[in-house]
Length: 445
Ligand SMILES: [Cu+2]
Image 1 (tube, rainbow, N blue to C red):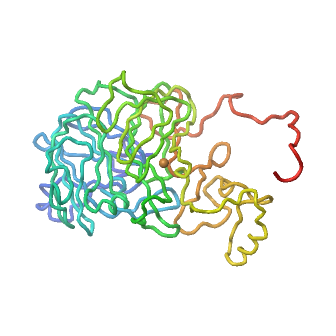
Image 2: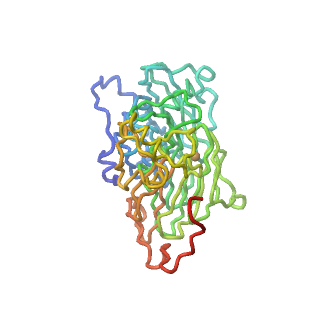
Image 3: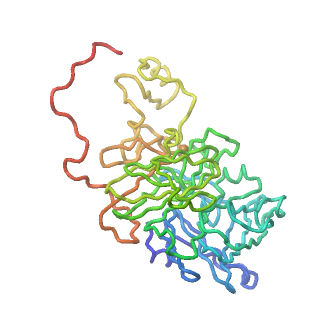
């Protein structure tokens, strides 16, 4: 993780050198790019009206410049290399060096001007999902504006009228462009920073890719059977934990730009659904959940009090969405004696490993020895189906999974990974040492 000092010293970011004519660039805000998937510290607003900034999971907030009272941002649509998790990189399209693009944060009532430069080899546009704005600023290419052709820069300008949770994405060839990773988060903070304060405000998008093992570019014609289910274009164990001090009020804002719904589940705590794409929900109308289904194209803000110290799982509850690069449509060989078949396949396929049957490693978690190193070789540029290293062994999870780490006494702005939870003695599930129950019967069931 990068500290705020590093953030402002530019450790994670790079400002494009003004190799091009200074005069030509004079009217445009400088281009700020990120060259890492590490999470950057929340960006305290250096000017404009005050607010408590959000923390973008494995992401960052785009700096702006104030010009005659208008907040000016510069987004660059371009090819990027995104590390999905250590061991795998994807060739995606994104904004300002990464996918997703940087989070944009403004304040209710702000006049906002966004310059969008297209460095792709095809036309694009940006739609500002959920915003109240003039029709000509809504970004549907062909309907509201001409497409932004390669090399062109367009200007969007509107007033952020409503506080809330938003996202941006192309509305030109969007099936391809969103499958390639073009999307970003937008937060409009309330004009009064005392409104609904929280201690930690995390934001991220849910996205999905179909990248065959050994390749780098997503298959953009895939409709449902994706093999990488990601939070902000990162798959577990590449997703940073969400850290909170015990007693903190925590908000998590999520947007779903995949092709299916995601029932997002928090362990050990109840949360309330506090906001939707349409705005904040009045306190009396918020409802409690431990799993919230996030539909396609929807955004939700959930809130809870970090009451219990520990390492609490937070994940999509579709079990295939907490797996990396897996095949589907396979027969179930659990309980089948496959040794003879395995020998025949091994004669044809070098390094083939049978994963079922007695005498073999059972379960896919056994494929990972706990440090991302497989017992069998992986193809180039892919991830094990599951397998983060945990304090008690391999964690049989991948994809849309991360950990909320709640600790006593953290500093207010400390987002660093505190390591694994040290459970008090006597508070962890333990092995029974007494007499075991009788075997139910001899032989296989
Ligand atoms: Cu899911």
